[in-house]
Length: 193
Image (cartoon, rainbow, N blue to C red; front, side, top):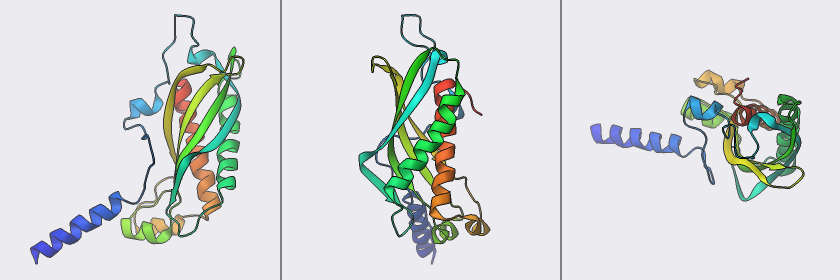
């Protein structure tokens, strides 16, 4: 009997661990990594993040994008449009006085749209979007700082009752995209809000 319980417990842990598949990169693992700027101020003629002013955002999918969670695929164009809209609402307003115009290249690496059934089984449910962002000078195309992988989520809904709070796929994508934009701003400028 004990062996059966151990097997069931290990199986459940494996199921929970395999709920989200990422294709490359990872989200920051500590609070410091999540809010530290992408670079430190430079003294060698390169651009300091405090001088960066984002003027445009380009969003695309990585070649081997994965979508998991729902039993149907959410339209890729809708996901890209929502991520771009969230980034354009958040990033240019973060530092309008910056002296170096920069374009943000956002590559969506993974999309996870949760569903009620998975949330009931795992006791929690959150949709997420993971993206790599690279900043390039608008005038020369030179990369500014280093690329950053950031994950935005719709927010965890703990307990089985949290499954009832899961929204329609379009709203889940909107919430995850807004959080992705907020966290990307934090990684670029070191601002957590």
